[in-house]
Length: 166
Image 1 (cartoon, rainbow, N blue to C red):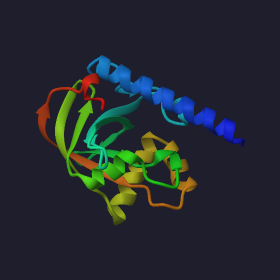
Image 2 (tube, rainbow, N blue to C red):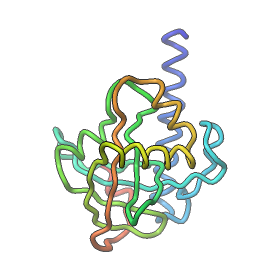
Image 3 (cartoon, one colour):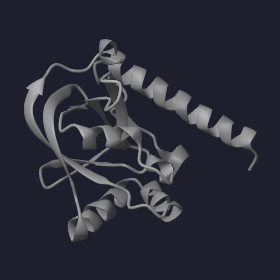
Image 4 (tube, one colour):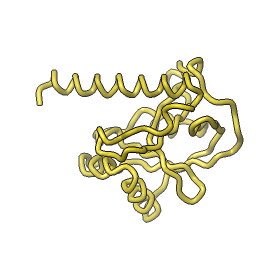
């Protein structure tokens, strides 16, 4: 694949993510929570949350839409970055700071997070593959261990808005 073709694919994905994020924020979560992910090898009713966190270098606030699942009373997100050989920026920012906010549809929360490891990590990752089959492809595309992040709700907060974007 040429560099131009790769750049076009990356730009199209970034445009899709930006559009998805704006839809989610502008609607207060009424739109954007459930999305058709078949274009990426997922299912017709993929669930998406938003996470809000601070940049580890900039200190700016960021909001990122991510596929999520729920298991054992915790919300699960996967740091796959499409199978890239490096971790996504949102994950590196979480590692640098324990603070994270979570929005699912029209409800937002302050949350605490932890990273699954060992047998729990494998169990949860495989659970996520059931709902989002593309995570299996991402796992095969990289040598790095893809982070499995579990979040537990602490307290309700106001839903996110476009003003939250750094």
